[in-house]
Length: 122
Image (cartoon, rainbow, N blue to C red; front, side):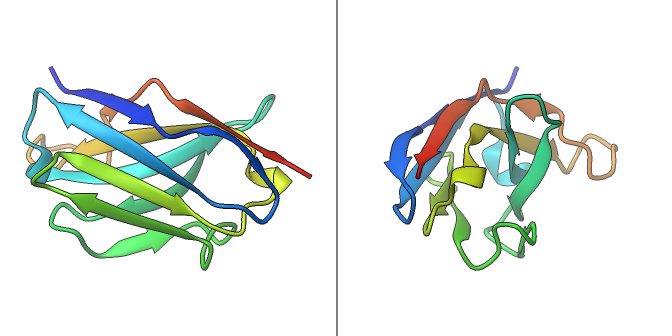
């Protein structure tokens, strides 16, 4: 069973930066497209960023493009989300998720982490 564990969340001032990490275990990390999602209180989960199994291509939601950067280190089974120029509206629980390219289900994220809280103060 694949497990994903996020870390790196916390409280940061508007305009500041934070880097989230997601460590994977129990699977074949290099076979996963990885994504970051976020969910603010009272709102539905939304897509933030994704990265291909080998480190590219990447894509971003319009709300974060130019400010966030997704990357991965397959040797460490870890995906990262570098968040710069943070805004109060970025406040949310951030989740990483894995799409197994070998499972026959197109673009479906099957494995999810527990989430890490990011709070941006004004």
